Amino acid sequence: MKFEKLFKEALEARKLSYSPYSKFAVGAVVETKDGKLFKGANVENSSYSLTMCAERNAIYNAMMNGYKKDDFVSLTLVADTDQPCSPCGSCRQVLSELFPSDAVIYLSNLKGEYQETNIEKLLPFAFSKKDLD
Image 1 (cartoon, rainbow, N blue to C red):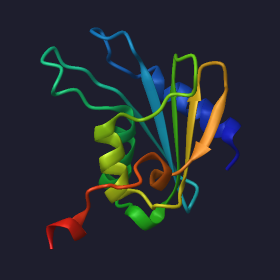
Image 2: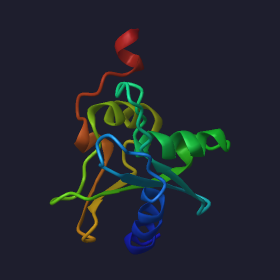
Image 3: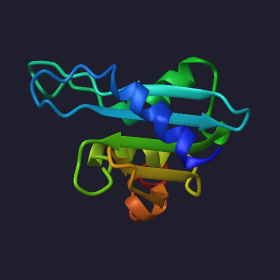
């Protein structure tokens, strides 16, 4: 699917953000091999540590609908930033386990600027299940 369509869907997801504390609304959309799109937005809490990011919400949304790591094709993320928005460390760790290492991740901003990457580039030395063996 082209970035432009994914970007529009991520913008729609961003409208669902609950971010009264940071005022930093983020939208994300996960695309699956069968063409389905799963949205996520950040949802804050006054205790801050209980906040859930858009990227994780989108991935968990897809998983709660029966999709698995191998079903994911892309993740698109959008926020009101000068440069394309990048996932936080927690999201990178989750992506390193639940998202294909070579799947496309589009980082973008409200101006439509974007950068294409993948989780291996975003978190090259991720802690993984192998480290627990």
